[in-house]
Amino acid sequence: MQAAALKPLQLVKNQPASELETLFQAHHGRVFRTAQRITGSAADAEDVLQTVFLRLVKGQDDYDWSQNPEAYLSRAAINASLDLLRSRTRSKSVALDESELDSIASTYRSPEAVHADSELRELVRQAVARLGKTAGEMFVLRYYEGFDNKEIAALMKTSPMVVGVVLHRARTKLKKEIGHYLEKHHER
Image (cartoon, rainbow, N blue to C red; front, side):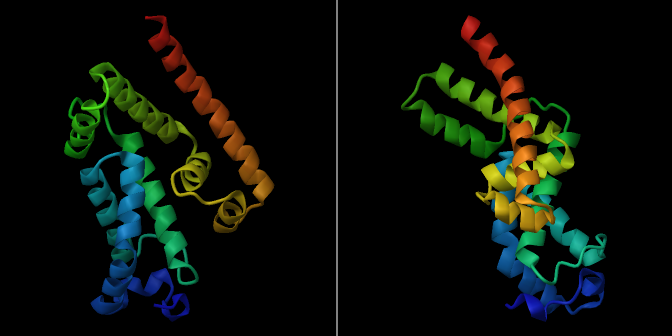
């Protein structure tokens, strides 16, 4: 599907279902994978996927995504995932997919190492969620999605130098937060 054939977002709610369906079929996998990498949970990723496409149906955003729907949907998935992490209260439950991964990994590593890795992954997710909107989005695009600084700058309509500065500050903040955790863990 060519991006030029898509109409601006404001018209989506008046479009036939087949066009929105085509958009969903073309991009739902990427939105889901992005959300799962950020949230660490398939169930949360499904919620994010639903949220992103429901916003399209309802026409809640003013952004004209017709030029690059893939970039728009990636950013929408990142933002919805970070919003979910920010709004979530600390839960005692563990997602099924995480427990499966931990049980597979535990056959090769000690339970302490598996638990520490799981704890560290959750700490990183929480720390990324606490970054500002722009910094969080840039961090996820760079380190979760693999975009380079030029691509991020183009997506976010800024310069690669600004992206570099924001990412440097975000990494510094994350290192500081995670460093405190690592220091406490190694004191024991």
